[in-house]
Image (cartoon, rainbow, N blue to C red; front, side):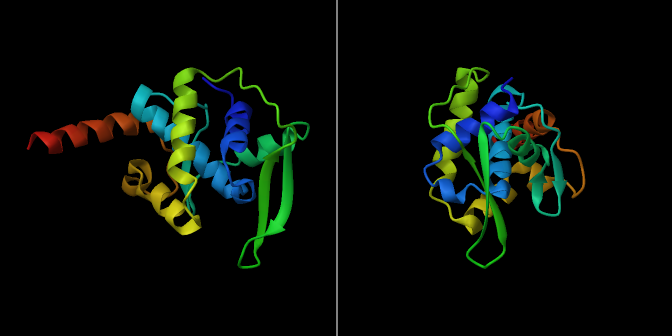
Length: 162
């Protein structure tokens, strides 16, 4: 299992549009990577305890990890195109190692970068909200991604049989 800081650093290093990596976007990219890994390996990359809150899948852990690791991450306070506050998370050093990440985890992270890099905020959020855990679960519930991936795959197989 990859540690959260390596997951965040990997996404920050590989995502081509650094100014778009707001706290919210990075958090949701970590969620998408955990969901992808749950679908392919029945386990998350991180050990995050995801919750479906008012704004989709959320945890404070990503922001907290960036703040706690100021030697590795930067947090730039700026504004979005609507003038609202935005915090962009980045890396301090260009040369990074990701020792805790396995090849399947890196593949899941690369998949998330490839799927989201060309999406502006609205299509990105639409993608996040279209994932099975968010589309099928009630707000304010814990999201057991591995269990939900199994349920999703069973439902998908049942639909394909009929």
